Amino acid sequence: MPLTLPLIVPASAYARIALDNIGQEYPNKLDHVMNTAVDVRSPRDLHPVFFGSYDWHSAVHMHWLLVRLLHRQPDLTEAGEITGLFDRQFTSAQVAIEIAYLHQPSRTTFERTYGWAWLLKLQAELIEMARTQPRAEPWRDALQPLADAFVERFLHFLPLAQFPIRAGTHANSAFGLLLALDYAQAAGHDALRNRIELSGRKWYGEDRQYPAGYEPGGDDFLSGGLIEAALMRRVLSADELVGWWQRFCPTHDALQCWLKPVAVSDRSDPKMAHLDGLNLSRAWCWTMLRPDLPVSLQEPVALAIQRHLAASLPHAVGGDYVGTHWLASFAALALT
Image (tube, rainbow, N blue to C red):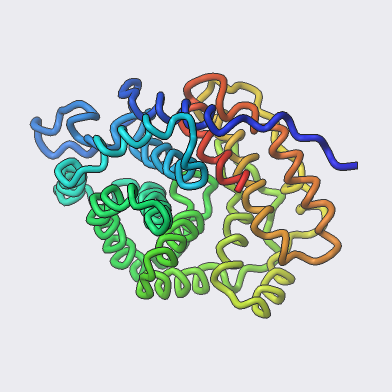
């Protein structure tokens, strides 16, 4: 008997929490190398576009959430407020400051690769939105130079990266590649797509019987194994994927770890709150993977998706700021 999901939160609730977060400068956790005393500055001075929502990458994916909502629901109640925000934020002058920040000494690894990937995911959504809604064109055009800067960083970094990072947190390599691949597809960027495919095959192509029983870590918001599988679904042909999954699939007992949601003991703890994100990102990955899985996994995975959503979806738009400054965007991934 399928589970009944909790009442789906209206899109306006997601829009409201994103709008509130984007404008909230403090508290703020900077990823900031100070080269001189001149660099002792406020988040808004350093990042005039992405200064709120606790940290730079969360500000980026909360902007993505608003673009996604507006793209899919142009008549959203908050549409006027969102449009006004984007008109103020996505300007050539402010984006130029974000780019200048990247080019300062000692900042080559700034937000690598999580923030890079979310910026490209945001730009991919703007590109797609602009195809049918002309109001998105100036936002897309203003942000494009920043997207170009991160594409350059991916293209420089990936050939040098000998090994993937498999952690279930920000540095996870497969997550970065997966979101960047969305941009490569939307923008028609063949060089980036080819480089991502090469790296995916090199890093994960020979994986065998993934040790899912080792997951999760205490502050994971990604499943290293599931996000890898979601990437390989995009990188491999349909025939290749069948063989790869057979080799990669955990043992029956280990697989159960991916099918049961994780309990969160303290949602006021910034690291433990990551586990709600893990439940949502697992649901997202399973939803992407399910059409290509063996028949024997179809029903267990369908039930797992519902259970993971039921466990953490209600906490995406309510609760402590350590969760609400970012979880709504992961809820949007899981629900689409």
